[in-house]
Length: 88
Image 1 (cartoon, rainbow, N blue to C red):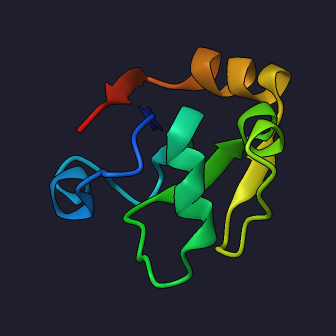
Image 2: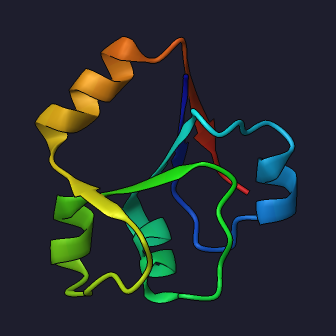
């Protein structure tokens, strides 16, 4: 399982899907949590979002997203075979 952290809302899903498999996890962080407001996106892997980033931006996710805290993020990071940061 890869843990792919996305920090920008301008992510290219077509490019991201090239490296994702169904068992991978995409973690939306920082401004990328604004993507939780879009219900029209088809994510190539499991989708998570960091709770503090959602709270700071005062948004309510409308997509199929699992909201996690920093402790769960740490657990995912430890268990992942790879940790990637996706910035584009």
